[in-house]
Length: 317
Image (cartoon, rainbow, N blue to C red; front, side, top):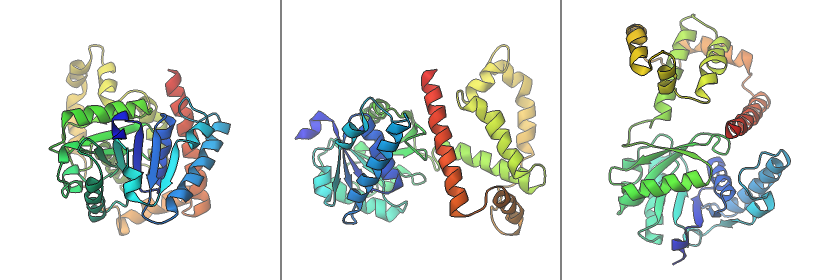
């Protein structure tokens, strides 16, 4: 069996996330077999990937050591699942964010691969114990949750099923590091994983501050982009605290712990994010960036360009 070579990855689902994962894996020199159950979709996706790779190369933003043409050569498209899985040591599932669909896909995959093949889901909000509940051997299953867009934002959360073997987590971490991602390993599953839980806390308080008339949409975004985000692009909240007091973390908590507890106790309930109370927040946002394809596409392109530049800057330091 060629899986022992560990150079073939199967990507199941050729949508936006599937295409991004395929680009990440080929940038690390892995052969990628891209599968979609809609005939012709995987081939279409590969045409789109090749176009993107050429554009990235032209902009000097291509990841990895290989040229775009060499990365093209590592891609193949498949309409037959068994064919796509053949020889793969790692399967990255990227289908719809619907539990039944993912469960069904993994049940099919398990019938077609050996016991040593790692099964990974790209889910952003479903816990592994649910996603893999129909799989017989759950010791080789995990969630690899990327941050959108994965090609420019390198973090990936590796979340184990309660039965996942430690060696599987280690192999996944090594593999993700090899392809240039930055893996973090959760020690156990939790709703929202780590990234979305932290993000939800930021969203809730930002929304409340705007909704309660404390600050504008534009200015709360500046609080992050020109304030907290400047630090958080390089160091996290724990190190920020540690560095912000002369004698480190314990000293920081002595000085500011009471104030933090007071502020946290003043937080309101979880916002509804809809209905009458949300109208003013939405109106402000739409005035800044109108809710139409042209404006949104331009801002997404700007975001991706800035993320690429920041990723490059971080690599240099």
